[in-house]
Length: 165
Image (cartoon, rainbow, N blue to C red; front, side, top):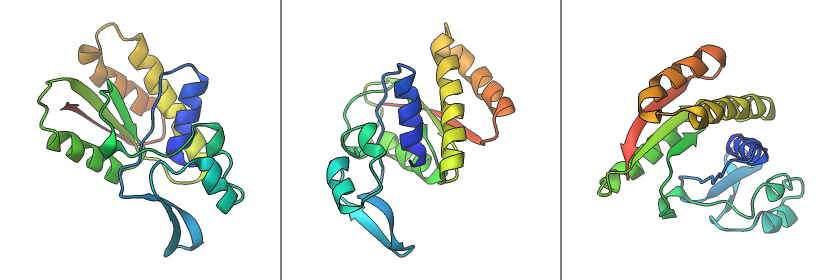
């Protein structure tokens, strides 16, 4: 399971209301070589992908299909990303939306290597962040402390910003 799907799985398993999205133009999965990925449109069901790429059934158990963040209109209180270029893409997308609703969103990047071991450890970092965020009585005041606390406990470097819808 990849980084974001492992985090999605762990948060869902612990009862969190979770959505996960990609930020590129398509879904790219490992292919026959590094330069030949398997490419699918967002919304292609994992069951269909699985039938084409035997062995990818783990994602099917987490959610129906990959989703594209740029196409999402819902507002979120917190957005987690798993690598810096995705963090940058999410921040850019939110900036392009111009913050007309003045609804704050906390965007947190947990830099996770794309392998199963690091995905599991990274998902635990995201889960720790989620626990502390949910336990906060005043998220706006507590967020810097939460980020610092988790950064001191966990191995993954964090990036954090507040953006607006």
